[in-house]
Amino acid sequence: MTLQQLKYITTVADKGTIREAAKELFISQPSLTNAIKELEKEVGITIFHRTNKGVVVSNEGDEFLGYVRQILQQTELLEQKYTIGKKHKRRFSVSTQHYSFAVNAFVDVIQNFGNQNYDFSLRETQTYEIIEDVSRLRSEIGILYMSKENQNILERELRQHNLKFTEILTAKPHVFISRSHPLAHKKSIELEELEEYPYLCFEQGDHNSFYYSEEILSTMEREQRIQVRDRATLFNLAVGLNGYTISTGVISKELNGANIIARPLHVDEYIRVGTIIQSNLTLSTLGIAYLEALKKYV
Image 1 (cartoon, rainbow, N blue to C red):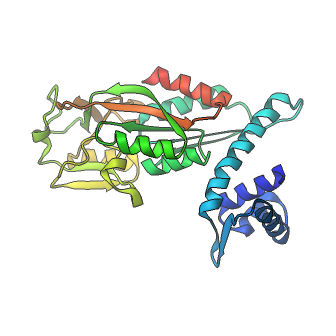
Image 2 (cartoon, one colour; image 1 turned 45 degrees about the horizontal axis):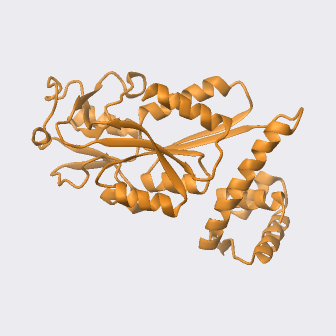
Image 3 (cartoon, rainbow, N blue to C red; image 1 turned 135 degrees about the horizontal axis):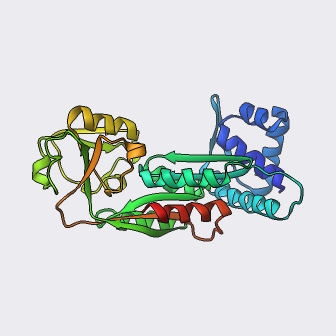
């Protein structure tokens, strides 16, 4: 087993086809295929299932790739620290629910390290994908929330994926609405006052249960509900339809626009937002810098 073989299989997993991976790695397709077969024979598992559309990672391969990504990340850290005179491309990725402070902190990291050779990624995505991304080291850090509704389920998922949750913010729920909303003049809002307005929430794909919902109080029945995939669409609907969503109350005019405001929601609930990382992972310099930036914004 060599580092080269490990880099080969992570590239194939990321690209989804031998052809695209071979192009990325600057090797021939037969050479790449043979290298994968040799590695599969050595470790005694099938890493990829071949299909007419490309390759699919097997269940065993998925677990194997989780370890492989840890090895490659630690190897890259060693190279950055001890290889003299060699320029390395810094890589850093965060997967998060839709929080403006997560974006602001990411901007800070780029401003501090952006004069170097880098490849950064910020994924505002679904809750289960955040857990998957961090467990497979597609992202070094994940950000999600817990409440008394979802805590038991999410803690179980994190244990199964060998991840740890560190709280960075505890907040009372707030309603995000447009500045022109009929309830915008109120200092706080009751749940009953929201019944006639469309409820806006982020769609969770195949894991669309309330345990993975990004919004607190997701078990409540709503007469009008609209699911979206991105933040810009949600806020456009909030302005255009007098819709609302429920979040932490931490808001950024620069990112969300001056038309969106937050009002406290009068309920006996709390939102605990935190980071997730692999339990045995030593954070990179960028990961540490990102956590410090988060503290500034929350």
